[in-house]
Structures are given as structure tokens and as C-alpha cells.
Image (tube, rainbow, N blue to C red):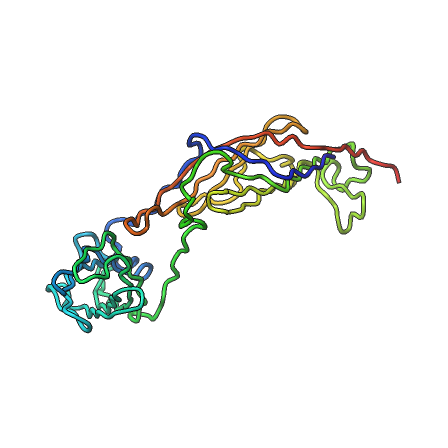
Amino acid sequence: MGFSILAVAALAASALAIDIPAAPTWPSGRCTDKSLTIPSWILSEYEVSGGVTTFKIDNRAADSTGIYAIAECKGEGVCGGSSGTTQMTINYSKGPDGPIISISHLWVCGDEGDKVFFTASGSTTITQCAGSDCVSPIPYLIHGTLSLPVPVTPAQPSPPPGYDAESCASVGDKQWTVTEVSYQNYTKGQCLQWYWEDRICLDNDAAANFVTRGVHLNLNVTNNAIDHEVTCSFTPEYDNYAPSYPLRCTGGEFNEITLDITLSGAVPNLDIQVEEVWYCLEDPSTNVNPTAIAATGSTSLQLTCASSPAVPH
């Protein structure tokens, strides 16, 4: 049986290796599904000129050629605009962090056969255009709360950890730190009492601490650019005695941090390769599109191990 603790190992990043999960997309149409799942609007083309504020509102439940309006606000209160605002009530007010645009909207979906009426409301703060003459360099997402056909506030996905860290997009030396490495390998010769021979060892207070034959692995990997730690672990079961590499530690879906590790060599001289995908929002004052970063790096663990043969009772 081998056991070791590695204090710190810093890994340098190199070229892309791990696959980047594809962004999910809605098929064309599906107005009803999208209205129930993502009731929301995109506010774009925000501009203030001569004290008059104009912007475009797109309902995300519709296709790109669907429901939109051009709004015009001449001060605080209800805004006017194009014919698309007929079923919208748009309100402009001043807030501590910038102008606040509130919207209440009634729309109809007929993609499921019968017409379904939806009513939702929401608001957003304009953070990048607070003057009397300015243009916002970014669009804004307005999350909605439905009141028709059922009152519901859909849960919004949380951004991945560290996406707004100043160092998020930094890739290079000392990219990751590996700590608390535990590598234990239980083999046939290290157990006197087996439950299901060669599978579960009953030595050493088996009722509370029985172990399965094979490799028991546990370690922590910290991405120093986003200060995010992932625990990688493997516990053998049945006929699966050792991890298959690359070992997925976390993630795999879009908007999730995804991290794989690969161990190679023979104990105590193991090498570790880390592959990770994470997301960064660079220059948020002028950009709303996150960057997916994929990197890989490797180092030598050089563990200190001890072998413990079975001792007769």
C-alpha cells in the first residue's frame, strides 16, 4: 500500500488539449418553450442625444425577425416609440448606478397550435452610458418574471467561478497548484481477510473502515488565474480497480469549468497532466461575450511512498 502527501506542485500551461463544450442553441421557432424557460429581452443600440434616449428591445422568445420595438424616452416616466411598443410598457428612471429601464410586455405564441398569451416584466441598469450625450458600447440582458399564463421566475444560470477576475485570462507558468495528493493501492498481498476474494479487505476495523482493492486517489488542483480549486478523486469498485485517464474531475457542459487529469509513470515517480477549460469576461465595460480558455500543463509529482504488507493477527 502506498501513501503520500505532496505539499505544492506548480504547473505551467501549454497548448490547447481538452475539448471546449459547445454552447447550447435553441432551434428555430419554439416560442412557447422559450417563453416559459427564458422570458427575457435584449436591450441594444442604447443612445442618448440632446436629452432623448433611444434603444431597441428584442424579445428572446421570438426569432431574430420576431418581436422587437424601438423605444424613445424624453425623461423619467413612460417611454414612447415604434409600433412594436404597442404591447410594451417601457419606463425610464434614474438609479444610483445609472438609468434604469423597466419593461412590461404582453405577447402571443402560436407554435403549439392554440394561442398562448404571455405577460412578463423585468428591468436592467444602464452602466455604460450615463451622460446627456453618449452611446453604450454593450447590450443588456433583461431577465423577466412571468405573470401569465402562470406566475413564475425561471432560475437563471450562475456565471462560472472567477469569470470576472482580473487575472482570469492569464495563461502561463504556475498556472495550477496541486496539493494534498493521496495515492493508495491495495493489492492482494496486503490483506488477510477478504470479503469477496480480492475485492473488499476486512482487516483493521473492517466494520467501519473496510477498503476495496485497487487504487484510491485524491488530490486538489487550483487554477491560480481564477483562484478556483477542484478535487479529483477515484475509489475502486467491483472490477474497476484503477482510474481510466484522462480522469474527469469536474464539468463537461457549456458554462462549466471542466478539468481532467492524467497520471503516468510508476510510483513514486508519477507525472501529472492537467487539462482545463474555464471562462473569462474580458473588458466587461465594452464586451459581453465570454472567452473560453483551454490549457494544459504537466509536472512531476515525485511522491514519498511506503509499502505496508499484511501483518498476521
